[in-house]
Length: 220
Length: 294
View (tube, each protein chain N blue to C red):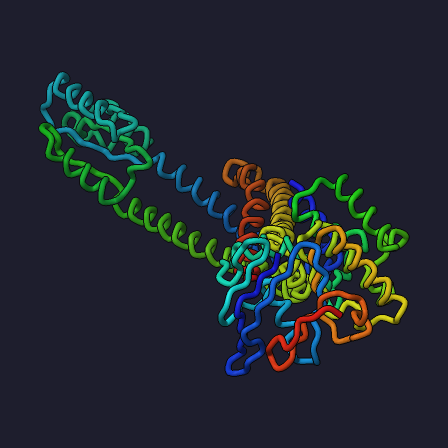
């Protein structure tokens, strides 16, 4: 599903990623770890085409995105659900509309959207907050909305950047449980985090980034 | 269809949220379009006055003395067959004398000094209004003068030239003025939409990251711009109509003949104002949004 072949990324003269290669399959749940500034977020940005690799090749769902044209980027991004560290929810939209937005630009009929969104909000335990605005919800609740938005269009890949960064233990466990459920349904999930507690002893694959390279690739 | 529904919802929500900004823009646009409409009305009235004057414009062709009736009729037929001439009136020597007598009234005795009728027969020709170019009329008159049996050709050359210059100046002014208003309205919408675009840049960035197509991002802002332009246009149309009706009714009380001289703007132009306002604002909004890069 995701293939990195000798990918490097430089910002001016600063090396951020160097000779990064790995391969993620459908339904994989993989943790991307490393200290702050190791390049975790940059690697995620390369996957959703926010950054272009300086060299190497990136393939997402059989599409080589290393040299993709501007016009095709939205198509690639629609295959990917992103759980942002800072949530990036629309404050002028209700919880329902925040989740529905990706279905709206995918051209789905409003009645179908209603069914899909409500089903998903129920799954993440937020059905009661359908008409609320995100800024009135707690951090954990907002993160669950973000996960619902990332899942709603049934993407092939979900990228989560520090999904539990601002949450207490209980909320963090709920979020991790949701992400594991998604991967069990065949979606590839890549979680960038520096919290070892999230993956230690889980048996999931871990890619450890340090000094711009993948230092280790192991099962936790 | 779903994109349009979403865009309309987003646009009207934003119009409500940013109502003060939108009101300012609508007010500014309506002032601009009102000035343009008032100018158009002035132009329409000047144009109809020019049309009325040009209808009375004619070339008088005096025939040589001693032409037989057949020769005069032959000349008349030639004029009638000419596609540039819309009307031909024959004035015989006798009619001309009669006209002069009527014009002179009690002083007509002076004509008795002449032995016989000193006036020539003539033709009064009306040139088609779209051909009333000074150079063209001059050339036409010269051609007629060269015809057999023609003594002299007269027409109001200076008058025609002034009329023509006035029309040209008015048209050039209308183009520049209309262009100026177009630029002003486009700029107003450009500025407002640019502000909205910057205020929403985080949301727009998120939409881009979620994979929203360009049209999905652009459409609400374009609709918002068009709304400002069309409402501004509609307000200026309504204001112009009301002001025109009030002023017209007031003047007509004192000068009833004004009804024959002043005309309102054609109804289709009243409808066209909001449409053109919307188009001008659409251009402004489109430029403000610019290229959406992913």
